[in-house]
Image 1 (cartoon, rainbow over the protein chains, first blue to last red):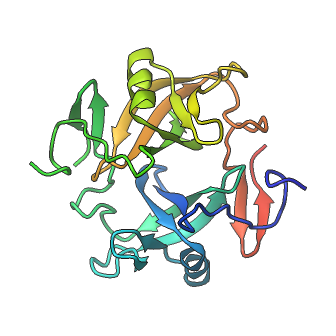
Image 2 (cartoon, rainbow over the protein chains, first blue to last red):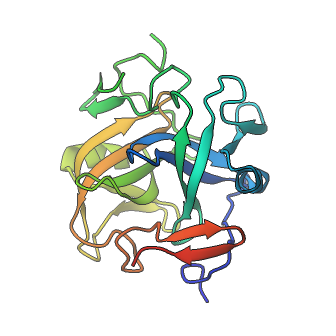
Length: 119
Length: 119
């Protein structure tokens, strides 16, 4: 069994003990945010059913929405072929972005400029 | 102007000079893969209209599909609030995954097990 075919959860954490995780809205499919998880964050997410990340800036577990209330209820977790990236399909309780935008990806790259495409 | 409100493309590359980039199918919305870009990869992607990443394993620019032919034609590039993650909406010429799967995210995490959900 290779890492691509195994049925065992075996994330390939990087040198900092992290894998990348991005979140889509389970209903609309829209990408909402991207963050990182260590093993504890992934375990807490699976156990609790709400997204928990590792905050690199604060160097601690970060339950998304712990301050804003905008938690992400996890509907499904996918993992990629080489198990170093996660895709979380979630039901957001509110705007995913700390700016108040529905998604963190509210700007389009147009050459050297950014154009706001989502409120 | 903050990094969240600027209209200037100013990716926040990490210590290795990389930002994370994930790809969705521009037609179906399905997430296909996740990889990394350095400044050269992003510039090449914008200039050429096809996704170019930085291969960490090979330590060189990697034009997606350069061997398989399964290139990713870029329809739109989005960047997140703090400019350390990119979302590429693409038209894939074939399966995105090196395993031959349409998406790299073909397995669901169910507790400690992985379940194949996509071919």
